[in-house]
Image (cartoon, rainbow, N blue to C red; front, side):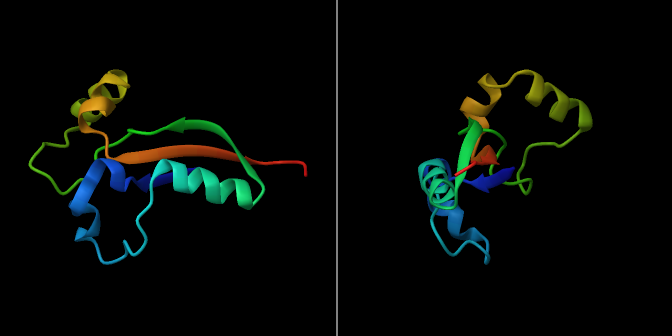
Length: 90
């Protein structure tokens, strides 16, 4: 499982964190996974908001509601990609 900020959806804010050194999109991660012998089981391109350091409240009910309203909530607020990968038999 990989949860990774997606520069396609975050734009310049992607570089706001010191550990973000390589610009990654869902397509780049899928390509790298294929090279490593992994196949994609599930991919949600816009899953969670980019950061928890925002003006939006993070009450447990709001998190529950966000997840219940997926993929609609992800479309509007998603900035991270979630992938489930599996090793191929090759």
